Image (tube, rainbow over the protein chains, first blue to last red):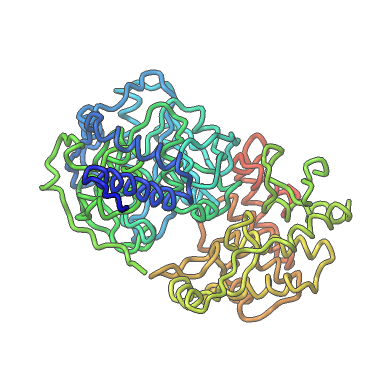
Length: 341
Length: 226
């Protein structure tokens, strides 16, 4: 005797099979990292979509001779920068190297304006300018060649070479790489706040280099070598997500030097582009997504940003970034993209 | 040093570091004339450690195009699992030389690695001589250490001569780091030491250090008995 199943039962069976098949696909696709991690990232990513928009402020600045302290002050207020009164603040510019004619480093005028703002207006307790150079091991040569030594002496601000600082082992929260801990410079782990001050540029590995890529300099070369390639071996995007997720400083801000940007073959050999902009905010991902839009790049096409957005490390979507200050449309310049291979 | 030697024969950067790495070469070099047994165990770790090697023909061609290197030849990494770089490779060669290991295939490959990665105009950057669209400039520490390593194994050719000429030129930013490396190489080739000594004494801080950096200060002591 043949038994017919009802349409409802068939639908239930089909639905059950679909759920099982979908589950099997998700399980298979997430095996490399583990389903629990994948689910944690995905859930946080979904939760972030419902969180408040991130503020990013833009300021037009045509030249390094402009009154940059006023611009930084206005930008900080517009972006609702954190209260840093009596805080120990590490200012981290991008001093990757000095190559004549290549604006691959953060201009000292921008860092100096930030120092003056932090000291005179934000009334911080202590400012340290710190960097762990990636290529050359001699920070003093780069400080001299870039004009930083003169500026730091003028402002009486200490410089710390993060490559040789005392080390602290910090746990990694994300699980995006195979590393569960990372050595980090004590100057960073003991700071109350970290301010990433990158140069706006294209990059031949990550397409864009701004506030998140600049964090690479806070890990010590004494452990990870020069150019810290051990960390690249973890996957650049995954490692940067790990670094952003695990930053030990409770307060942070990004101030991007886009007055003269670098286009083409960044991080070193690109050409200057008069992009005339400063931008900043507390959400590094939102700042970098805005930086990409300023460069004529689509953030959703940049893997370095989309993965972090998916994992809930900040906002990427235009409708979740509250822009303040100057209009993005008036400041946008199309950067020549980094070469792809 | 002996207390910090790990069970695998290598050294990490400090007691808190659970992984042997590039510090092993320094330790082997330092211990070779004091405790050859410890140095030999370190040397074994070095011989068992190599930078990533590319063997796939398509990838080899791709790397050649982007970095202008022969990726089938490798040296030593900063840490296991990484590609090879000039500094740890030259340092490993010097350590193995001090440990009386001079004919091993890894030594020969290390020498070939250094020669392959030289910048055509002279000297060495930190790894490859070229990156995507641009020639990388030489750095003083890579060039001085590579020259010291090749000299230890009696390698002298156009590549080393060009590098030595670059190292001898006067157009550099006069920091303690730059002077120290030039003095360290100059000491080995019998160059006059007065200028370097004078420059480093001027740069020496009141606390006796060079740049407040243990590494640069130690090199300065090695080079000039400051």
